[in-house]
Length: 309
Image (cartoon, rainbow, N blue to C red; front, side, top):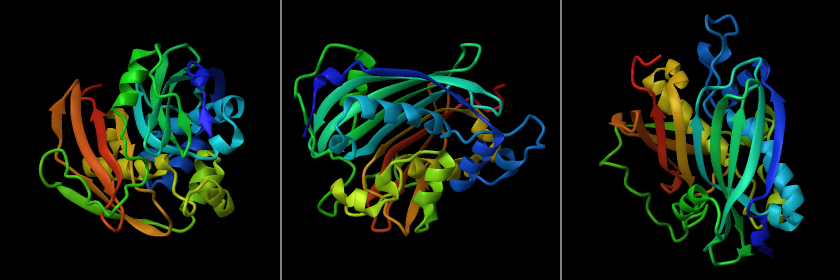
């Protein structure tokens, strides 16, 4: 199986989605964000969206690109590898958002072909809401080894992506954090049906997460939790340590996926003290599986400075 470099530059959209309170609340609840900012529709200032919510309205474009450019057997082997979300603001109930997706990089990795897609979302007035660089690995799939000319940001992001894929082999120990030991850790239970709940609440349908036969056909050992669900669960815990209102201050979320998350199970979210960097505050975190392997590496939240409007 092979991905042609002709896929580079593929563009889909704009896809327009209406954002309502029901969708925002369902997504927040299924990733453990159950405080009043996420669920109280009578709250002054209105509901807060979970920072990972943009994955919900970006997904239809991912499906469209797969349907048009990838053979079914190739698309079925796609797993989430990297995520880099930049928020100009959180989505709000009543928003009418338009998203455009562009494939900006394709590069080989030991586990398969790495494809990087950029999603750009604007509101009804044309103002930017968020931009996402979404990296996926197509396990066991090849692609041309030479980099193509094109989007520099995409090529740079692709080269920064992990080379060991979504499942680390050989029982390797989890990597050290950014600076010494983590300041805190919290266990998160992952029930057997979480992928099914997440699929419906996020409105993201990929059979490898809920259909065991489809997962086995794709070369996976079992159904696995969505990468965005793992990331969202971690972001929820990190923000709880800061105070839920800090969700409105989030401006960037990054992470690299490693070990697959199978269900049922337990995850360990670890976080480091807040540091200053860039244009605001930085929070580093990671997620480990029950046997100590990194499910999510290099997790970063970037927030506005304290007290910023």
